[in-house]
Image (tube, one colour):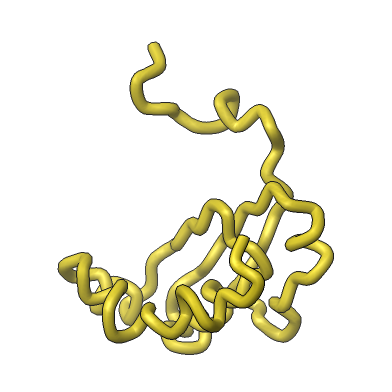
Length: 97
C-alpha cells in the first residue's frame, strides 16, 4: 500500500486513468456500482464519490492497518469492508474450474 494514495493514484485518476476506459465517465455520471479491491484508506473511492454523486462505491481491503485509517467519514455513497483471506469462495477466480 502506498503511504499516500493522494500522491499516487488520485492525482492521475481524472486526467489519465478514467479516460482509458471508453464510456466509463458517462457511466459514472449516470450512476453505476464500482468495486475497488485493495482500496487502502478509501481515498480514491471518496474522490470518485465526490466527482460522481450518482454512483455507489464499495471497497474491500485486506490490511488491518489501512482499515484502521479509513478516510470515508461523510461519504454516504462509499462503503469499505474487510476482505477475507478466502476470497475464492465469494468470487469467480479466472482459470479455476
